[in-house]
Image (cartoon, rainbow, N blue to C red; front, side):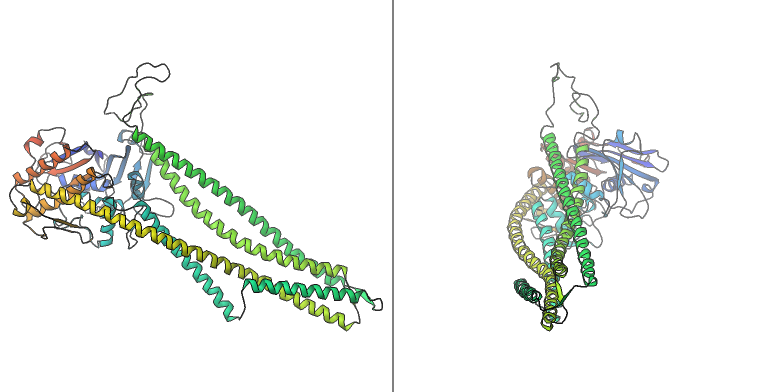
Length: 628
């Protein structure tokens, strides 16, 4: 809900300052007095991408708006700049009065497009609205600007178009917007689609990695079967053991003169063993440090998720208990001086101002925690992948160390025959087998990696199958909800058309209304082109039907807000425009659900014009335009 709109010129003087209310708000005045300019400023400050300003609008430097979203009050600010697109938006978590006390503190500026280091203002507003992050099937991210295209009925868009006109408009983007706002888009389905995309990408990467490793081994004609490697290593170990026994037997023959192993050989083995032990020590330190980091990260994420859950429960509790207030002091039981019913920003107990409403600070904290959780999970995944690599390398180092230690022990304890050909032959044979064992240990590291990849791929295949099954089920449920939503839109549209003046025969007893968000068209009884003024009535009936349907069906995500600057376009009769105004006013007053309608007109109904609870600002004229 828009609660206040303020527009400043380049010197900081106020050109426009009006408050808005729930229900119907009518901005009225003669043609060319700035009503559409105000509508464009509302669209712009709420996050719309508008840049085609007229000369009056370019007198302005900044537009500010106090808004309410799900009981959180915040103030928005956006600079007006000629011919510049996708401008950033500044947000203050509190009402306009608090926001303008100082312009140096408490404000945060968010870009139009999200970056690696900063959220976009669309993400901030979507979080407040409870919207998921939505991408259309062409991977085009939905922004608040795209949502506002279905909330703002402007004069410049063709009457045959459902959405506010935009060049290079993608059908899949329009479909995603409609699914989001009609409540058809399932949050969990969105998450499953993202998960399927991520898991499929992981599956493809691991499959490619496995394929490349196996191709490399085929080119070198090397076997990488882990069982065969283990069997071969065990067999070679036994053969080395047998050779050692034979060597010992030969060495024990007294008739053979022997000499000790040369110090040079032992020193060489010592150096090699030390290198391996140092490698093991360093890798082990890295693994232990990484293990501690992973545990810390898991605890940190768990703490953040618990905090996020507590914040969300606090917000839900606050919303559910919004109407409850303390009437007696909990300490002394004396009656409390209760603020007025309309003052939602004063604490009943301590009388302090609740800046931005009771939920604003909680919503701000929730967004910060969600960002921390996302970043922490990315870092945790990288740490786990690094640990898996280190574990494989550590196992290989351990095997090499054991082998080198045995070789060193034998060298220290043994003596070498000086003239026995058999002894020399056995030593050469032993060395060859030990080198082969070393090579096989290296191969086993790759075999472990291959087995890990195969195991991961099998798990990913199963996960992909399960996710696709969930998606198919949810898509069927989504289609059922879409059918309910479209039927509701049809009924509201037909009811509005039936109350129109008798100017278009087809409106008297409409049979069917077809609404096609993908192709951005709508049809009445399979027709889509009536007289110019009737096209306006039909379009407005369809667009308002979305608003009023959202008041009836809780699953709609439409923000229960509509901005209409197109009531009497295309040669509309004054009496017909006024009749439409009264239709909308009656539908609005008949609903008990909070909503807001902002409507501009140069043909205001006299009865509505006299109602100060409906109109906003003066009746604008050539000498009293909207921008002072």
